[in-house]
Length: 317
Image (tube, rainbow, N blue to C red; front, side, top):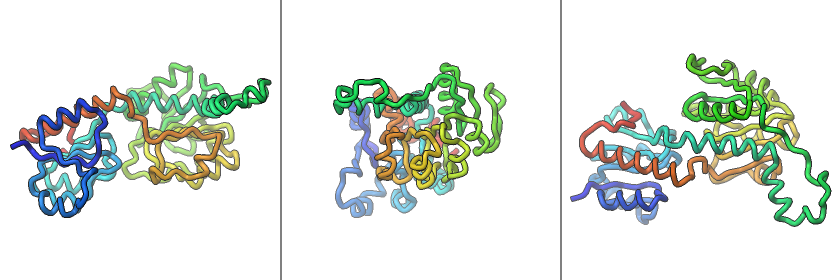
């Protein structure tokens, strides 16, 4: 009999789904009706759970899965998983750490260039036929050069370092803040976020943010200033969205590029209507290459745990 896998989120790579189906009996919880009744009847037979970083798995659900051997997160976020409970139970929780780094860093730079150069507004200008009506160059406001901007990075982990490497290639001086300075990187450490914002033309959020909330507030945005840009590819809750929308409306910062939000998929109307904001739908890892690599890591975690081994990507050891 195949091991029983409870899948809480879809995986969009057909080859990964085919492998899952060939190796396991997969119960697609995200498609099921009568979920609570199903858990009561079948929870004891579940060997493994696949979930996403945003969905996670609640402690009450975990408690209904007494035979569970692994929680495999198809992503890097574990905010929605009770790691302390899993650790106490000896239950490995894995994540696809490292697989997303390059794509997230690419999108951070893409968002920054897009918002500096008004790419989305320019696209709408051409698509809407306005160029024909207003052919003079002055019809489109001048943009901001990205090359050479002072870039401040919040969180110098894998993604922060990858963003720094890309920004440095554009001749950008790099500064960063984190819990402590790091000896193995050449960039300037700034201990306080408000000081980093004051010294930056662009502030890029890359922090893991397991506990931080609202750290980019009115004071930080005021320090970033009317010619400064904010980019967030980390966690929506790092930003006080009310302070951000007010700062944008008042021109206290120049613009923002956002892939994540406090209450996804609900994005404040003021952000959606602002021409100084470039938005994405939490899509930083959404390439075939990265999603395939993530799926392979999930498969490895399941195979290791169900073979009685401690998964190499376990976060609860």
